[in-house]
Length: 115
Ligand SMILES: [Zn+2]
Image (cartoon, rainbow, N blue to C red; front, side, top):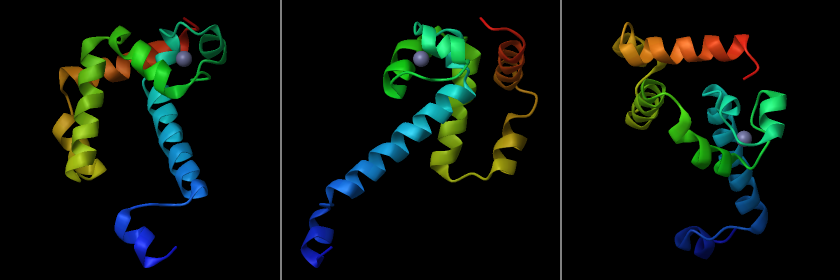
C-alpha cells in the first residue's frame, strides 16, 4: 500500500473483502446473540437455530419482531460498546433492569424451544 492509498482511504479488493467478512461475521454473531432465528422467516435459520441466511437481511427483517425490552437491552449494549465502556461497567449499569431480565429470559426461552 502506498502513501497515496492510505491518504485517500482506498484499499485493495482483498482488504475490502476481509472487512466485509468481518462485518458480516459480527452481524451474524449479533443475530445469534439475539436468537433472531426464532422469529426468522427463513426455514434454514429456524432449523439450524442460528443465522444461516444473509446476515444483514435476517437482521433487518427480524429485528422488529423481537420483544421491545430485548431490543432495548441490545441497543444499550451497542451504545456502551460505542462509548468504550468495559464489560464490567456495562454489567453494573444494566444489572437488575427490566430490559436485562427480559433479554436473559428471551435467551433462556430460545434455548429451551425450537420455535
Ligand atoms: Zn435468518
